[in-house]
Image (cartoon, rainbow, N blue to C red; front, side):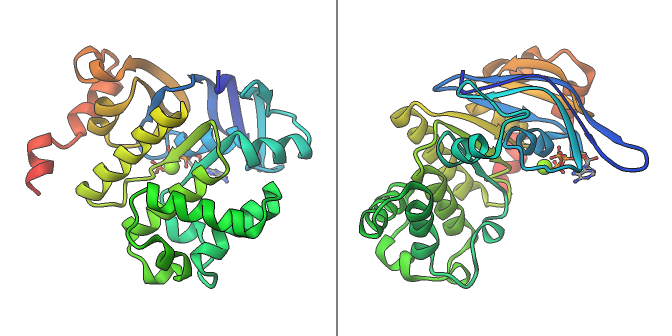
Length: 263
Ligand SMILES: Nc1ncnc2c1ncn2[C@@H]1O[C@H](COP(=O)(O)OP(=O)(O)OP(=O)(O)O)[C@@H](O)[C@H]1O
Ligand SMILES: [Mg+2]
């Protein structure tokens, strides 16, 4: 199993600790596209951030989170560093926030490979160039010399996907990675994810509030409400088989496909 979360509880510390996650169970196998849906504030981002141990003392975490068999809860710094550097990559919604605005794109991406993976700079440059082309960026050599502000949102999202793939992860956690993009760009980015998954036998956890997208591309979809999984459905059955009133409410709130494509 690439990602195996079992009975995950999380509270944020404070005068009165806030309990956010209440016993999450969630799995991603190699080659699987798994969706995590739920309304704003239900705990989707908290789940993936907890999986990567991006919280410090402000969060109390219990349960088990295994990434390629490595237990993340209670892991030491070296184990965390190794797992983050090689097994798993996170793609977030805001690509501008993920890139250093005053560094050229090629420098940002290649230097990480040099620093974390001990690659020679020339080798790292070649790998980034290939990946930028693979994710569908035109003129990849030119893009490497450009700064983030010179690229559109869709282009930058391709850049951060290339950055995520550059360390050859087995598991990709995509947190609303396509939500800010127009429908056409979103479809292109999703197609890139799907082809990369096929080619590299990746597993992916796709966080989205778009139930049509989750139903169309996910093998399995977890429905999260207030820090609890209320229902798990096959993606192809999402709209027909959903039984939980919360899932039905999310489906009813999802804009109809006709309306989406018309806009
Ligand atoms: N660092 C933090 N300290 C305290 N509470 C937090 C912290 N981060 C998140 N929360 C709370 O945890 C809950 C879940 O937030 P989270 O960001 O995981 O939701 P989400 O499902 O990703 O929502 P969205 O769809 O809006 O991105 C929210 O009530 C939020 O206010
Ligand atoms: Mg979120």
